[in-house]
Length: 368
Image (cartoon, rainbow, N blue to C red; front, side, top):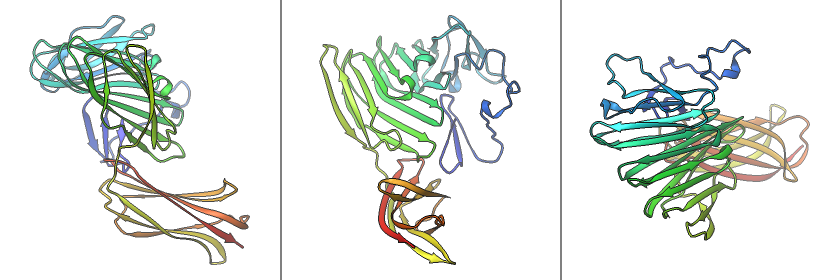
């Protein structure tokens, strides 16, 4: 489930469902429940689970996979076999689910488990076209293989502790070939291509406690038959650059650093960075000016007092749906703060698309 920064829209990855914030959607982590009281289905929490759906019945399930069973959706008006759940047995680590095309259209499919989710979205299909999606949550892997040449989008997600990371591959899959994407431990992205040479691109997204949301776009790249590409960010918190290593089918290797191609129209200016006495207290102040901010955005600002490269105090602010205007932020400093420091303002505007915009400014201040 992906919720936009302003919490006004949610999207369910792989199912094609979305909605707004009318107060009727509630979610909780299993860890929020006292031990032994969480509402679960026996054996389901630890199993690999698949979800598939096709609008109008363009594609239907080809039957129960080995080591798993199909549970249809509870909807009398649904086309039989066009949507449902794949529940793997506890001993099944890898699940392969087959979709058969009935007519022109598209479908979504996902496999998840253990903090991992792998999905294909908006897959075009037609009569008699058979596709296979294999997922292994413990290996952080999905493989898509089909009988038709077309553009496909594969998406992986990993959640570990306080970090959530998503990777998306947009590529061309060829009839009789396959695409394998891995995200082992959520640390890097690996993509192997079986088919004629083609162009592809990838995107990375990260949300982590203590850091703002980050988004990376690679731009178009080329991959050949049997090639494997590994993308490893230098810093998942910012995603400003990613090292991409390519191993060719002939055994040769190459490596380069890609800069972020994602752009944002938002403009941020930071001014009036100072410390002054207000009501007898030392107060840090920073003024931001925003331009070209769209709807459903969130402004986040972090004020940090540092000395010798170390942060000694910090204060954060968040504003939903900020206006294109100037705004002043004030922070009463700890009474123990005395001497010369560097006051740093980190400003972020998180939007639904096209990207997150950041700006940073620092100034030397004296606190008496």
